[in-house]
Length: 259
Image (cartoon, rainbow, N blue to C red):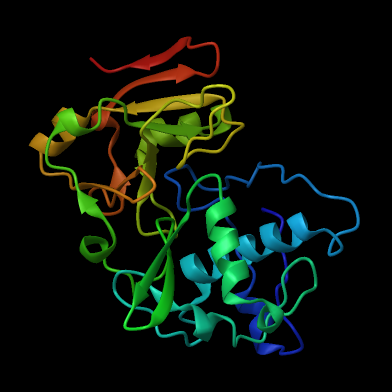
């Protein structure tokens, strides 16, 4: 199971809802772990970088997974008021109460995020924020959150990153959305030195979607503001028939080719 972090702050009711397995919901087989390594700065809580980065991590979890449990008023397009977020009785991994952060620090966390996971909106004098993708919350409606893709020509590359240990289950049951709303694909390859939204940095297998075939046969595909390609598939999965090819990464050796 993935490492779990407790973001609670003195209120036991928040403890359970602050724990999430971030490995699920990305179209992989059951049992996948979160293999991402997060660089740890020295003196957690003392560094300004850690403070903002940890704020961003907490915002990501709240906006993707926790808003309902925390009784936040989330719109169908995923937006919530920043002021409502800053009233929550939670602490970041820097042990800083969310209530101690400012709107400007939230803006900085959004600006600094290298995968552009957030959008900020100013409306009627209020600042709102949302996660661009990755939700497990049923409050969010796909059509309100994302832009539909109407032609395969819009996305020349559509690739899902995973790990060799998941290939057997994927080839048996397809790419599953797991506990999230969508299966995630990237619009580019995980080239060295370039951050790719929608894919973990340490994947060793890349799966190419046959976009033309998927669209022609009625699969709905969408793209988020940070260029992640998403689909609910059919009944929560992308069947194997829509996998064009599978390659090892970074070797680019063929592991599967559709017939």
